[in-house]
Image: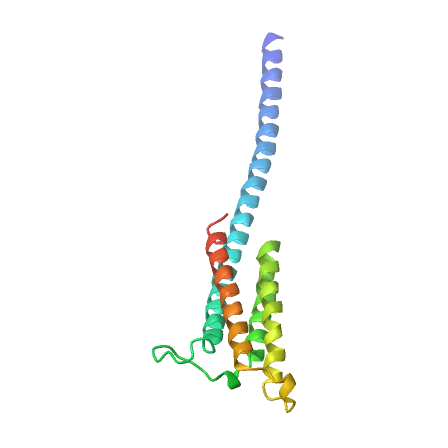
Length: 166
């Protein structure tokens, strides 16, 4: 009888050990999967940040064309050729494609930049306005471009900091 009780208790403890091991493995597997998923999201976010960073540099170069007039060492463009519509729409389209993995704060900063650049559309339209009082002058274009370049620079600094965060 003593051997039967020992065998019975041994079987119960073995069964409890199996059940406990099964549930602990499931919990650990869930945590492992969650960690893998978070790492994948982090990688997607960082890839999107890199691509947005490159787009911002391209955008900055466009706006810088209208700032440094008279500097023979930098590429420049006549302010009458200012027309940022294609650049703005291209940038906005790419941001919209990549926004799913971005933090809310980052998304807000990007859309704030897009909104600020939108004013340039009106300036570009008014460059060739027949009404002289409504026509956009060179100083307005240069000032707008400087403001956008400064905003882009701030956003680039922000992205350099954010890409290092997990």
